[in-house]
Image (cartoon, rainbow, N blue to C red; front, side, top):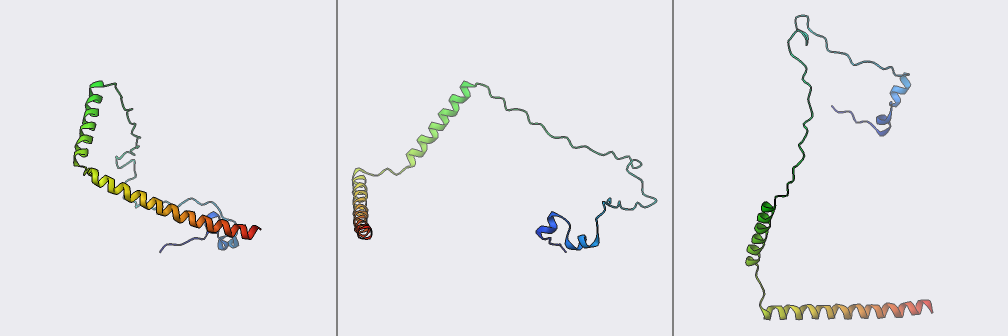
Length: 127
């Protein structure tokens, strides 16, 4: 079962511990060894120390031929993707442009009307 500590208990001793008196530093008890069990030295096992793995720095050579090849592959892939794009016809572009201009004009008129109304209200309040 997990014990949930309050913020005060996490920072220091709990109220129960403070009431009990000063706390002494006690070492953690070692588990008792059975009399017949060999110790770490007697068992022949050595403690293994983990070493950190050092990464080799990435070597960057000025491999011009490899770079040219990768640039060609990139633009070849771009060209292949552009072939898959659905390009609109001239008529579709004209229709889409007309729709955009109409919507912008409508929004412009709505903002102009709202601005005029708020300007008149502000003149009435200030005057």
